[in-house]
Amino acid sequence: MSIRTVQRWLKMWSESGDYRPKQNYQKGHSATITDWERFRQFVEANQGLTQKEMGVILGVSHTTVGQALKKINFTRKHTLMKNETRKSDNNLSR
Image (tube, rainbow, N blue to C red; front, side, top):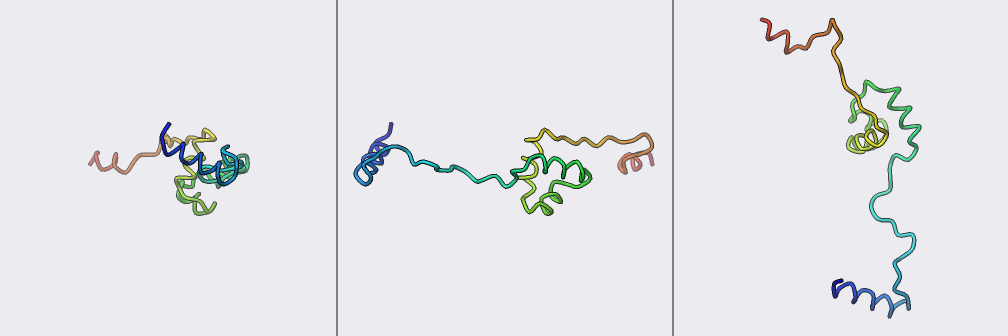
Protein backbone atom coordinates (compact mmCIF):
# COMPACT_ATOMS: atom_id res chain seq x y z
CA MET A 1 0.00 0.00 0.00
CA SER A 2 1.39 3.35 -0.96
CA ILE A 3 1.73 6.40 1.28
CA ARG A 4 -0.50 8.29 -1.16
CA THR A 5 -3.35 5.84 -0.52
CA VAL A 6 -3.09 6.36 3.24
CA GLN A 7 -3.00 10.16 2.75
CA ARG A 8 -6.13 9.99 0.56
CA TRP A 9 -7.96 7.91 3.20
CA LEU A 10 -6.98 10.32 5.98
CA LYS A 11 -8.19 13.27 3.88
CA MET A 12 -11.51 11.51 3.22
CA TRP A 13 -11.84 10.75 6.96
CA SER A 14 -11.19 14.35 7.95
CA GLU A 15 -13.63 15.77 5.36
CA SER A 16 -16.51 13.33 5.66
CA GLY A 17 -15.85 11.16 8.69
CA ASP A 18 -15.86 8.13 6.40
CA TYR A 19 -13.15 6.36 4.43
CA ARG A 20 -15.24 3.88 2.45
CA PRO A 21 -15.25 4.05 -1.37
CA LYS A 22 -17.79 6.22 -3.13
CA GLN A 23 -21.07 4.46 -3.89
CA ASN A 24 -22.48 4.25 -7.43
CA TYR A 25 -19.16 5.30 -8.90
CA GLN A 26 -18.88 4.22 -12.53
CA LYS A 27 -15.51 3.37 -13.97
CA GLY A 28 -15.07 3.53 -17.73
CA HIS A 29 -17.51 4.54 -20.42
CA SER A 30 -21.15 3.62 -20.45
CA ALA A 31 -22.09 1.15 -23.13
CA THR A 32 -23.44 2.69 -26.32
CA ILE A 33 -25.08 -0.54 -27.50
CA THR A 34 -27.32 -1.85 -24.75
CA ASP A 35 -30.16 -3.68 -26.53
CA TRP A 36 -28.28 -6.77 -27.69
CA GLU A 37 -31.24 -8.57 -29.24
CA ARG A 38 -32.13 -5.52 -31.34
CA PHE A 39 -28.46 -5.17 -32.37
CA ARG A 40 -28.36 -8.85 -33.38
CA GLN A 41 -31.48 -8.38 -35.52
CA PHE A 42 -29.94 -5.29 -37.14
CA VAL A 43 -26.76 -7.21 -37.98
CA GLU A 44 -28.64 -10.17 -39.42
CA ALA A 45 -30.77 -7.84 -41.56
CA ASN A 46 -27.71 -5.90 -42.79
CA GLN A 47 -25.05 -8.57 -43.25
CA GLY A 48 -23.76 -6.94 -46.42
CA LEU A 49 -22.67 -3.76 -44.63
CA THR A 50 -19.18 -3.13 -43.35
CA GLN A 51 -18.56 -2.32 -39.69
CA LYS A 52 -17.90 1.28 -40.68
CA GLU A 53 -21.26 1.52 -42.51
CA MET A 54 -23.07 -0.08 -39.54
CA GLY A 55 -21.40 2.42 -37.24
CA VAL A 56 -22.61 5.37 -39.32
CA ILE A 57 -26.20 4.06 -39.24
CA LEU A 58 -26.09 3.32 -35.50
CA GLY A 59 -24.22 6.50 -34.60
CA VAL A 60 -21.22 4.70 -33.06
CA SER A 61 -17.65 4.07 -34.16
CA HIS A 62 -16.64 1.08 -36.27
CA THR A 63 -14.56 -0.22 -33.36
CA THR A 64 -17.65 -0.20 -31.15
CA VAL A 65 -19.48 -2.22 -33.80
CA GLY A 66 -16.55 -4.65 -34.00
CA GLN A 67 -16.49 -5.13 -30.23
CA ALA A 68 -20.26 -5.61 -30.16
CA LEU A 69 -20.09 -8.18 -32.97
CA LYS A 70 -17.47 -10.06 -31.00
CA LYS A 71 -19.64 -9.90 -27.88
CA ILE A 72 -22.59 -11.53 -29.67
CA ASN A 73 -20.21 -14.09 -31.26
CA PHE A 74 -21.03 -12.96 -34.78
CA THR A 75 -18.45 -13.81 -37.39
CA ARG A 76 -18.66 -13.39 -41.12
CA LYS A 77 -16.46 -15.20 -43.55
CA HIS A 78 -16.89 -14.60 -47.25
CA THR A 79 -16.59 -17.73 -49.31
CA LEU A 80 -16.37 -17.73 -53.08
CA MET A 81 -19.11 -19.49 -54.94
CA LYS A 82 -18.25 -22.00 -57.66
CA ASN A 83 -18.72 -19.50 -60.50
CA GLU A 84 -17.11 -16.56 -58.70
CA THR A 85 -13.45 -15.76 -59.14
CA ARG A 86 -11.26 -13.10 -57.68
CA LYS A 87 -9.93 -10.36 -59.90
CA SER A 88 -6.41 -11.22 -58.86
CA ASP A 89 -6.96 -14.82 -60.03
CA ASN A 90 -8.02 -13.55 -63.45
CA ASN A 91 -4.89 -11.44 -63.72
CA LEU A 92 -2.67 -14.42 -62.93
CA SER A 93 -4.06 -16.53 -65.77
CA ARG A 94 -3.10 -13.99 -68.44
